[in-house]
Length: 409
Ligand code: ASP
Ligand code: MG
Image (cartoon, rainbow, N blue to C red; front, side):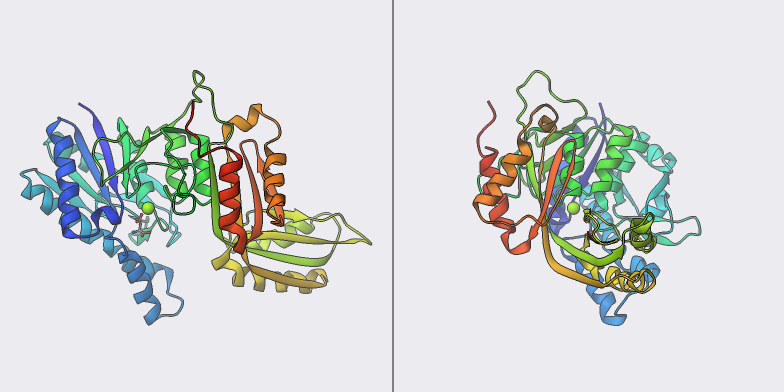
């Protein structure tokens, strides 16, 4: 008998029939004798609908009130799933994030979980009850409703698994696991049986939308056994996120190709080349809570230099106006932005022990005439920023060049 946290995403609870399906799946695990905590997202499309609704009323919705609105989607699904479980003859009880008491900080729309009360859940579990918890939401110290950022139900699932020291956290979604890349772009993409935690962290942060990055960070920190599975298919093993590299098997050098369309590049030209300049530029950007990703500073000439960095596309306008301010008080020459950037990354722990990955990547892109505008690397990934219009081509040729379409030996 195990304690299992299952999380079901929006498409898995997209209509009443699917909710009943989820209930049957939960019922099966319950019948096997497992203790179950089930986390659900809002029905698919619902959170988008609520965000749009808010924007119709207030162009730039007040973050506190936006959280009040967008957290409601999950409240609907927990109630419906509990009803469906009861219809299966199972005792079930639903809780919102604040009811469990998932305590978060007060950064509305992207709050971080600080602490989870497990007493109520434990008590229900001991009574043989299935506990159904709303994903994506929590409450701050002052009692305000908060949300955890888009895709945040994954993080709720993993955080609950950590708090309860669950045996496994199963993330049920509309794909049957983590793929070498997005199969919508590369039909030959293959499902991975396992991926290391570090690779998954890179894949998630680099744009693979299977798991919210925070959930992977959480899993790493608390060593939660995490598995991604399909809610539409029976019997698959999904993809297991492991903490050890499999030493028995010959590792592929590259495990996957991640990409992200939502990038924008900002450049400030002719800034004085002196100590502290990077801080003067990026300090205010960080203070505005804008995520900076790739950064390039050119070699200085005649005492001045150019500085470029990428931010999420949605933050470009804010970042631009901050740079305009920086320009004024540093005496920089010019500021400009490019909204049509994309990032493509090859990821794999095998890179640690193999040379030539970067050159193979650059050669492959060169052969297609794709210009690389920025490069960044870590121990296990190489990312390039390119013009968005070449994104799909780049992903396809790289997938092939690294032989990801071929089944592992
Ligand atoms: N419903 C939220 C969203 O659409 C949270 C989630 O699905 O994980 O982002
Ligand atoms: Mg999701």
